[in-house]
Length: 194
Ligand code: URA
Image (cartoon, protein in one colour):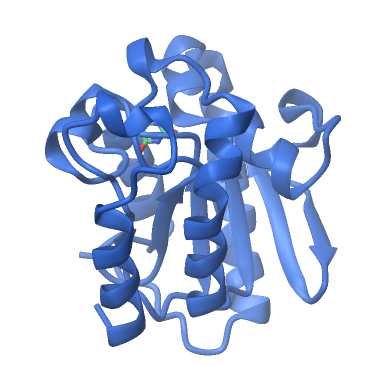
């Protein structure tokens, strides 16, 4: 991790700006390459993430990794993954507006540090905030929307794909579209096939 990210992470680890700090085991700051051109944003940590301190390490995370790997992307090499909130909401409920607001400064600082070319919103919570308040994942997934020189795309949340496996082919098509867009607009992203 480069210095800006490391300092930011250390600062974030001590955050007590909303009630989620009372029940968390770990702050889940984010994972990936701090020079990535592509940022994925999920909702918030679940139980496994809270225990391990890393985003998307449960079943949904395994599915995310599989889809990423299929198009030459990986959290180890060429993307960064963060969440709207850095601490687990109890019982995996949606993060409350005030929790999202209190946490937003960390995500904004991550975005400033990364300066991504493409932001992928995993599920409606991130898509509402970054794309539009009336974003419909089922209708608008896979579409790129440009704002201030950054391309945003909403995707099905991997947990939603686990609940509704019929969506897998559509979801996978979005990863292929993402790969094509990376080839078009990203300068230093190298695809990796291990
Ligand atoms: N779901 C999310 O949105 N983020 C995680 O880190 C894990 C599950």
